[in-house]
Length: 152
Image 1 (cartoon, helix red, strand yellow):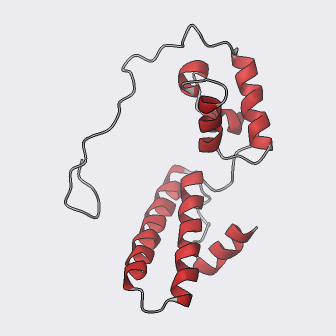
Image 2 (cartoon, rainbow, N blue to C red):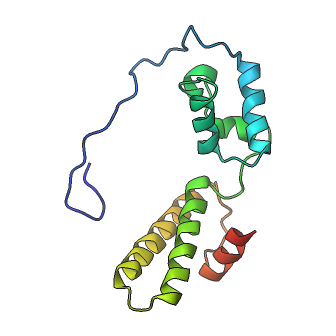
């Protein structure tokens, strides 16, 4: 698949195994993994940070193969998920950082282009999440409101 904002193809990268099987050497049971995930979520970590911590610290290669559920699904079961999806909130943080940079550096046109691309990506994601039901239909995207959400 081609890249969105360049003319490159981008086919390289590592691939996951076709038939994911729970590793026999994994020493954590399903209940222990769910408790670890909920403990890390209560510490304030996001779903991707929890996955990285489980991989690097606890030796869990893939939560989905070990549990049969993704980290986000486990967080939703335990009512620990975020109200705004993680990818959308990280894009909003990026937009706020670019906006503060633009206020200090008016002539930086490269950052203006990055601002425009990030803004349009957020609008597309909001439209998608509204159609799938992950965001309420009456949820509005406004840059000033985003600043308030990110600063909390």
